[in-house]
Image (cartoon, rainbow, N blue to C red; front, side, top):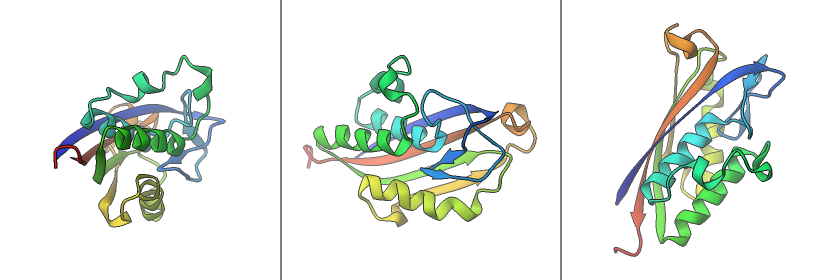
Length: 160
């Protein structure tokens, strides 16, 4: 078994959709980035890539490559799962936290978990997503951005 840790953050901006966990969440601002800027999916991708020894999302899908412009986070997650599969790893679980002042994410968390679980081909009960505020502290607390953290457990099928 191996553990991976991931983190991502993006600024909020008008004129963008707010996409988290592959779900569009109604809000007046969205996350700014080269892709859909889904901080939750990006953190999960980084955690998986780290666990299987493949670096991070920027190394695999550089923002300098126009092929990844506006790409959906769930598409990137599918590619990351394929990379992990090719190395003989099976993803066992995901535990994550999204940090965002507004909007409230509780009504959307189960759909986000189902989206992630579906792509990773694991039961939705194996995907935990928590939502927190930053209690008004820092850029996230000021409502200027969002961040996400994720840990994953993967099993090395070649070691079994």
